[in-house]
Length: 348
Ligand SMILES: NC(=O)c1ccc[n+]([C@@H]2O[C@H](COP(=O)([O-])OP(=O)(O)OC[C@H]3O[C@@H](n4cnc5c(N)ncnc54)[C@H](O)[C@@H]3O)[C@@H](O)[C@H]2O)c1
Ligand SMILES: [Zn+2]
Image (cartoon, rainbow, N blue to C red; front, side, top):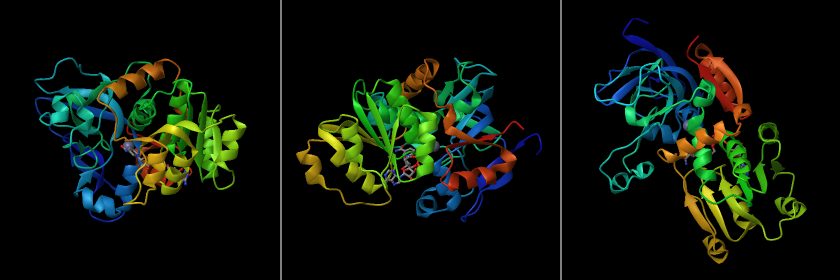
C-alpha cells in the first residue's frame, strides 16, 4: 500500500470469490466525507456476490469493492459539509438516494426508486477508506462500540420490519432465525410483545436465537408443530403479527395459517424468483402484507440507537470476529449456515 492506495476486498472478475487488492483511496466530492473503516459486517448479500450467483452476475459490475455494513471514523470532510467533524465515529446508511423522485421530495427517502447500494452498485465499505455522502452518515454515540456500529445495517432491517406494526401486547411470529430474524426477536421483546416465537429448520440457528434472546420461544418446524406451540402458549386465535425473515415460501404459507383473522405480515425475506401464493387464503383472512426494503432514513437509525441505549442487546448475535486478512475464514463461517454475524476488523 502506498500513500494513495488502500487495502480493499474487491470482486475483481466475474467468478466465485473476492480478492484483496490495492485500490486508490476514494476522492471525495464537496458533499461527501471520507471514512476510515474500523469494522465491517459480512451480509448475506456479500455471500451472493462472493458466490457470483445469477442475481450478483446481473446486478454487480466488476471491478467492485464490496461491503455495506461498517463502522469507522471521519477523516476528511467535503467543503460543503457542515455538522460533522473530523474524528467523529460513525456508521451510515448504505443506500444512496436521489432527491428528485416524488417519494424523496415527500421526505420518504427509503422509497426513492433510484436507490443505489454501496458495495453493490458503487464501491463499498470492505476497504480501509469509504467515500460516503455526508447525508448518509450516522454518528455513533460513545456507548455504541464499533462492532455494534458494524451491524447497524442489518439491525436496521430487523428494526424497520419489526416496527412496521404495533407490537405492544401482541403475539409475534418470526419465520427464519438468521441474524436478522434473531435481532428482530430481540426488538419485538424490547417493544413489548407478549409472546415472541421464532421458527427455523436449522437447529443451530434456533440455539443461537435462544442464546441471544433467552425469552424467545424457538420452534424447529421440521420436528415440532407450530399449532401445538401456539396452543401451549395460550394463543386462542393465532399470532397477531408475522415477521417473515427466511425468504422461504413454506414459511410464508405457515405464517398465513398461523395468523389471526386480520393479522399483519411484514415481509423482509426475499424469495428466490416468483413463488405461488394462496391469495384467496390471505383475502379471506383479511391479512395485511407489507413489503420491507432497507431501513427508514433516518427514523430506523434513530430508533435503533435509542433502543440500544435503553437496554436492547444484540451483541451475542456476533459469533465470529476475524482480522480482515482472514476474510476467507469469515466468509466460510457465513457460508456454513452456522454463524450469526461475522465481523471483520480493519484496524489490525
Ligand atoms: N428486504 C431487505 O431489504 C432485506 C435486507 C437484508 C436481508 N433480506 C432478506 O432477509 C432474510 C433474512 O436475512 P438473514 O441474513 O437473517 O438470512 P439467513 O439466510 O441467514 O437466514 C434465513 C433463515 O431462514 C431459515 N429458513 C429456511 N427455510 C425456513 C422455513 N421453512 N421456516 C423457517 N425458517 C426457515 C434458514 O434456515 C435460515 O436460518 C433473507 O431472505 C435476506 O435475503 C432482505
Ligand atoms: Zn446487509
